[in-house]
Image 1 (tube, rainbow, N blue to C red):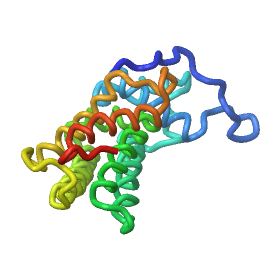
Image 2 (cartoon, rainbow, N blue to C red):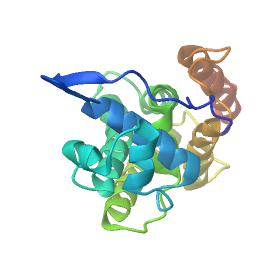
Image 3 (cartoon, rainbow, N blue to C red):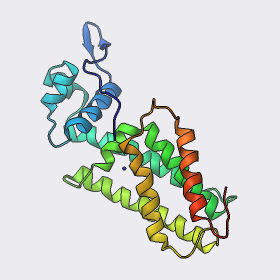
Image 4 (cartoon, one colour):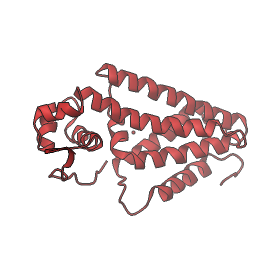
Length: 214
C-alpha cells in the first residue's frame, strides 16, 4: 500500500495570506486533509470536518479548494507520480541489467512509500468509489503491469529463479513493499535508505538464481 505516528490534535499556526486575512497555505490544507482522510476515512469526512480540523469556516476552506475530491486527487497524484517516476527512471537506464533495474525499482518504491507515507497510505485504501478513485486505480494497474514486465525480464535474463511464476513474484514484491505501511514511521528507528536496502537484500537473495546475490 500501519501504526501511524500520532496525529497532532491542534492546528499549526496560521500563515498570513494577505493584509489582515489569516489562513492556511494550500500545502497545509492538503496535508491536514490527508491526515483526516486516513484517520476517519475519505467517504466519512466532510468539508465541515476539515474546517473544524483546521479551526476555519467552511467558506475559508473553499477559498483553497473547490471540492473534497480535489484534495483526494492531489494526494493520490502525489503518491502515484512518485511511483511512476521510480519506474520511469529505472526503465530509462539502458546501462543496467533487467535485474538491476528491478532491484532499483523495489528500493525506490520503498523510499517513496516512506517519503510520501500519508499519501501512499491513502492510495492503498482507494476502492474505486468515485471517478477520482477509478482513475487512480487505473494508474496503479499500469504501474503493476510495468513492474510485472520488469520481473519477467529479470527472469528471462536468467537472474532470478525460474520455478516461481513471474506474475506471482511481482505481486509478492509489491505486497511486501505495501505492507510497510502497517508499521513504518518516517521518524522511526531506521531511515528509508536502511529499510530499502534491508528489504531488497532479503528479497533478492531469496529470489536469486544459482546463488547470485547483491
